[in-house]
Image (tube, rainbow over all chains, first blue to last red; front, side, top):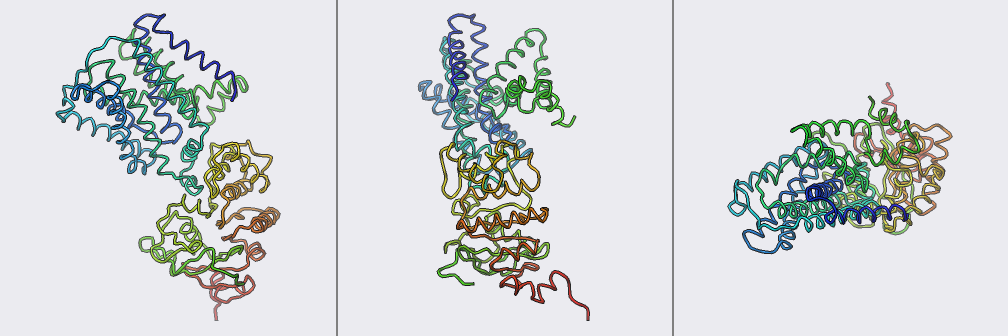
Amino acid sequence: MKALPWALAVLAVAALAVVPFTLSPVLVQFGISTLLLAVLAQGWNIIGGFTGYASFGNSVFYGLGTYGTAVTMTKFHQSFALGLVVGAVVSVGFALLLGLPVLRLRGHYFAITTLALSEAVAAIIANLGITGRNTGLILPLIRGDSMFYEMSLALMVLATLTVWWLARSRFGFGLIAIREREDAAEVMGIPTTRYKVLAFGLAALFSALAGGIHAYWITFIDPASAFDISLNVRMIIMAVFGGAGTVIGPVVGAFLLSGVAEVLASTVTGIASLFFGLVIIAAVVFTPSGVIQAIRRLPRRGLATFLDAVRETRL
Amino acid sequence: MTAAGPPLFEARSVSKRFAGLLALSGVSFAQHEGEILGLIGPNGAGKTTLINLISGTLEPSSGTLLFEGHPLQGLPPYRRARLGIGRTFQLMKPFPGLSVLDNVTAGALFGRRPERDMTKARDAAAHWLAFVGLGDKLAQPADALGGPDRKRLELAKALALQPKLLLLDEVMAGLNAVEIDEVVDLIRRIRDGGTTILVIEHVVKAIRQLSDRLLVLQYGELIAEGTAAEVLEDPKVIEAYLGRRRH
C-alpha cells in the first residue's frame, strides 16, 4: 500500500469536509448534489464497471431508497435514520429478488429490461395510496445544509472505500472475471450468479442511501423525480467518463461533469444535456478506460495514448 | 489396463439431445485415477458435447455422470470446478483485459483448494505459468499472446484449479510438430503430478503417444475402446475416418 495516494485522498476528504464552514451556501448545495451523484456513479461502477452489466435499474434503487425513507418518516412518523434503513432494505431486497432473473440477460437485453423495470416500478408507486400516488410526499422540513453535506461526504467516502476493497478482494476479482468472460469465469470456480446478484445488491445499497439523503434534504418527492431515468444516464456518463472499473474514476467524473454542467446550465438552459451527450461520445471514443486511466498513462506515453485510443476504437 | 478401486469418473449411458439431433447416445465409460484417456472421432461426433456435460456447461438428457462415486447432476459448473474438474476450451477463452498472471490467479482463488489471499494466489499462478513455460510473460495482457502461448495459458488456467480430472479440448490444434511435442511432454508431466486427464485430440500421433486408453466417438456413439494400437487398427474406426471401402 503506497503512502502518497492515501495522503492525497485524506487531504482531499479533509478539504471537502471544511467546505460548509468556509464557502457560500450555494456552493454547499452544489456540493451535496455532486457528492450524491458521486455515490450514484460509484454504485453504478460496482455493477457496470466491475461486473460489466450496464444497468439502467440503478435509478430504481435510488427511487426505492427515496420512497422507503419518505414513507417511513411521513406515514409511520419514524426517524430519518430508520427511514434510511428501511429504504436500503427495500431497495437491496428488490435488487436481490429481481437480480436473479434479470442478470441472466446480457448486453442490450439486460439494459433494456432494467430500463423497463424502472418504468414499471414508477407506475406502481404512482398508484399506491401509501406513497401518495402521483402527488408525491412532503417530508418534515429541516434546515441544515451542513449536516446533509457531511452525510453525503461520509457516504461518498464509504462508497469509494467499498470499491477500493472490491478492487483488491477475491470477490471483486470474481466480478472482474465475470465482466471479462462469464462462461470462462464459471468453469474457473466462480459462482457467477451469486456474485452478480450480490454486486447488484451492493449497487442498490449505495443508490438507496443516496436517495434517502436526497429525499430528506429536498423535502419533496414524487414518482417523476424519484424514478428519473436521466439520473441513471448521468451516473453512467460520470462513471464511464471518469473511468468505469477504477476506484476514484467515478468520483472524479462526477465532480468534473457536475462542475461543467452547472456552469453551462447557468448560461443557457438546456445546453447541459447537449454537453452530456457530447461527453459520452468523446469519452467512449477517446478514452475508453476513462479520464483516470488517460491521466495515469499520459506522462509515460504522451501522445501515443491518444493515438492508441483512436486506434482501439477503429476510427 | 484396469486400476484398483472405483473409477474417478464414470459415464453411464449418457445421452444428449439438441431438439431433433441426438448429439450423444448411450455413452458409457469409466476413467481411473492417474489414467490418460484419449477421445477421438470425426467432427461433429459429440466430443466437445461430452466435455460440456462433464464440466457442467450442459446437462445430459438422460444417463448419469459420476465423479468420485457421486452424481454430478444439477451441480453448476463452478461447483464442479471446485470438486476438481478443470477444463480448457477448444476456442480459447482467456479473460482478454487481464494480464496473463491474473488470468491464472482466478483459478488459484476459486479452485479446488481456494487460496483466499491475493498475494499467495498470484504466487501460485506464477508457479503454474512457469510450469507451462510462460514464466517470462506474466505482465502481458492475455489478448496480446500468440496462438501457442494462448494454448499454454489455457492449460495454466485449468491447472491453477488443481483439478483431479483435467479435460483438454484440442489443445494441440494449430500447433506445429515441435510445439506438439512440447505439449505432449507437458501433459505427461501434469499426469505425473497426479492429475487424471481426458484428452480430445485430432493429432493422431500425439494421442497415440499419450493415451493409456482410447475411446472413439462417431455420430454420438462410442464405437471403439481399447489401447491406441488396438483401436487405431479397428476396421470400424478406419471406416469412420476414411469411409467405407468400395467392393
